[in-house]
Image (cartoon, rainbow over all chains, first blue to last red; front, side):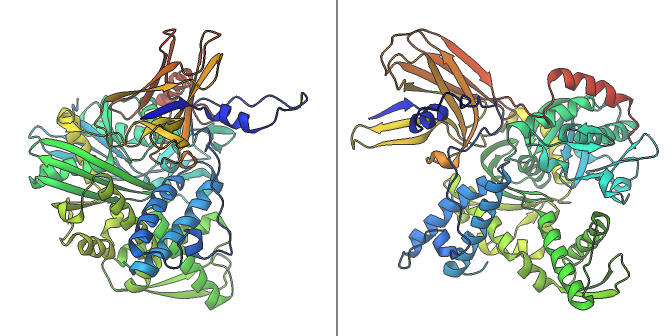
Length: 110
Length: 496
């Protein structure tokens, strides 16, 4: 039922970018190993957003959906919190704070 | 010679245990008479000596003192520079391991082969760095074992329990939650989840901020102006934190180093618990994640076991008791059970079934023939929690006509959304020209007992293949040649 076509990060990104002028250096060869990169950065949360907005919790969302959403976000951002990129780590920490605040608001403090 | 030795190379404390002839593990004290050695290294300026442990921690020269090096074991670029010489995290850790080996071998005989514990979510590089550190210290690593697994092995051994055990391991720098099934001597890990940079030192930092705020409020001056004084106050906050696990209220008096006066700090357990509440909520969410990963509910857990110094905080016990409806148990000294379990693991490893700690896969455009949908996604080849050692293969297709080079990204992470996984490697394979798109390529991932991953790509039409172990390059990563040279050098160093 599923057909899986290999897509490497460098190829899929190169396909989206118009041909580089001759004077530009060729695409950098990534270092083998380590965390080479994230596919693309998730949008950074804006400082003015409320925790609910950051977590994309709609005003009338049912509690079970909020719970599922928070679980998904926690898994994602807990992982990002150990990134070697300080910027990603900081964003993840901000998101984890927001996730905890939303959880406390809708489900009470521990 | 000690046959079965386990080492807990911790963020804040390290310990070594061995298996006695009666089959029970025991902690071996260091030459300072301590059962556990602070994971701190001090580079003495006047004598050619490296101090490790309490003398290093209490030395008071922050520019020459290295704390919590374990937090950097996964950073390929991290280096510490002392007197113009650059030290990798593995080298600093090797000094700590050398101290343990030298001190403890005076009591139990030569130590040549060890089991070393690591956090469950330590990545490839951190695991490799840990093995390198042990080799530099003159020890062969028989196995790496996840800290909560080691603790559970000790708990099962000492308590004789069976059933499903959830280990909540809140140490100085990390939180690990592991669920395992114990039947006699046979242990099967069901899942491990971890949170980096979440541990007792985060609580210390929060208390330090509260101290600093109080001090400034009372005196109008900053509590510390340099790293040396900050460290001193940090030790005081750590002591206060420990006292608050025993008492409801603690009073402290602090001063800065500029004679701006004294400030009295009043702390209650309630205010401390309020301070760290949101961090503890994160730990609860990790427990829920572990239960989800193992498809279990809280009621399915037979025993909740506490490991790590931060589980002495009463609120930790309270929230887990509320969550599971049963009192969490400590396996003796929460600081020592990981090392004790590692010594047991050295003998019993064949009876312990561990699992893959993360999912590994590649990036693919996945077409659903039924719905017609197509999506660029992380295509998992080895799912998290697959028993190890293991090997799995998936077949993909090439995307372009006349594709000369196949590139396969190696991803680590469970998320379907490729934005939320790490690309930890890439394999390129040259293939013959003039082929249409849609040629089949088999991608195989293998995962070994030390939780290290290898990837194999085979072009099915031409039979060409390429296999790689995920390897790392960076200023802070040692080559095999570096490793040999530095091992020889380290053996000549004075380490006290």
